[in-house]
Image 1 (tube, one colour):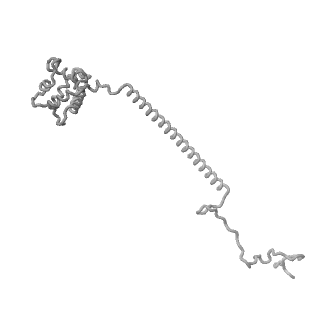
Image 2 (cartoon, rainbow, N blue to C red):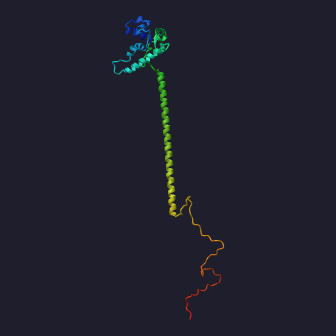
Image 3 (cartoon, rainbow, N blue to C red):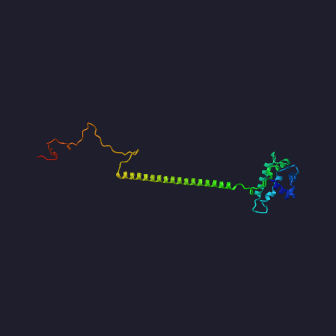
Length: 232
């Protein structure tokens, strides 16, 4: 803590004159068990006045759990700054050495998180600009993805239309074949045709007896003799 904060405890909690503040006497007053150390609980008791500035136990809106968390944070801060040998105990020597640091003369070294200004105005503005740029980038990516989605849908619809058109053409061709009476197709899709009757070499064309054989030129065919004619 700062000198002003310790003097405030010296005056309000101990009832002593702030102008007569003495670090060694302060240490002995708050070493409750007189073991020569300020332990964690004894340190936490020093923060009560500072915490009461922010948290009021009588105010229902104030979060007492948050107040205790703040008390622990302040204790750890002091331990890190004062407890040189890291044994979780502050000796008189360590305490007096801490009061000789320049930070001890600075006010509000025990500020709570609510009292601290975490960011400057410029830092906040820069952070807001960074967030805004990220939002713009995300919005552009979303628009690009939407366009890609629409293009893929358009291509899909186009392929479906071409597929349906092809199926319709195939169907019409099959119907046309059936109407024209085309021979049936084979297993491989080839058409089956009946081959023309072939004549073997040396075979003479067969004609019926007395049939229509060709006559030599100038010959007159005689009428056939009737076998059923009766002679005298």
